[in-house]
Image 1: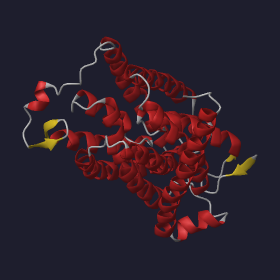
Image 2: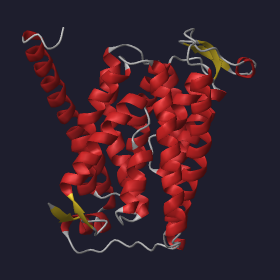
Image 3: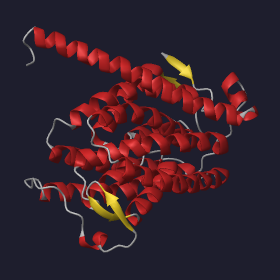
Image 4: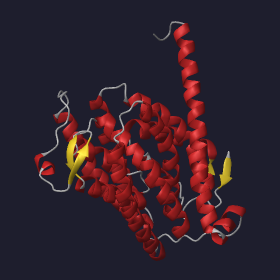
Length: 346
């Protein structure tokens, strides 16, 4: 089933995008990565303009994160105080990134910049997590806060102890910036930072990552749409149908499998995407010019009423994701009960 995306003005297969959204949603809920590290290189490979890829990815992440976060909220593993600190500084870093993308868009170098950031960032972080997960595979004690973090000033009380607010300030700003220029939810940095620097268990770190993503991604989705005209509402809603469904099950899976495998899988995915992004970087055209064409209702609405269009994108993403997550949770519970009655599950 082929359609033309109204803002990106590219023909895509709807079924393919829904399946992609499901896969990304499961990984998002399970690993706290927002799904963008997988989604964006694939969308760029489909010839969707990189400006639209970044903005639309952030928009669907806002919705997918909501469904995953609600699942974690029930388990009471979210440190909301830490999450709020990260959100505030994430806004600052994110807005800085949106302005940078706007500048690069005028030069035609958004695609080159995004792919280069993917290669360097994911290669370094993926290697670190892979080595660390293998090194500490058999260690079961809770992670410890490093000594240099303990010596930082401006401390306040969090669930894992007294930690300097400089940690969430730095992590929040950097994750917000990377989210806005890479189209990711920031969990790629927040989750490891909270585990290795903040002393949080992996499930708590993923839960906080989900929490901050709901707010930061919504904020960035609006400004990417308003400033850069980089959000395609149809693309966002298609991806949400799959990603919201997947995020619910991903969050549940994460609480039931060995934490070593979560970190190991996260590292492997990061390294694979880094190599794929490098291939795209060296094989694709260096310049990419994108201008919205007022050939349909949504494109005209964006150009003539950017605030209205941008607000509609964010609200639609959150509402659709919430509805889908409720439906999928009920469906899951129904299937489990039926299987238990038949003796398939205990």
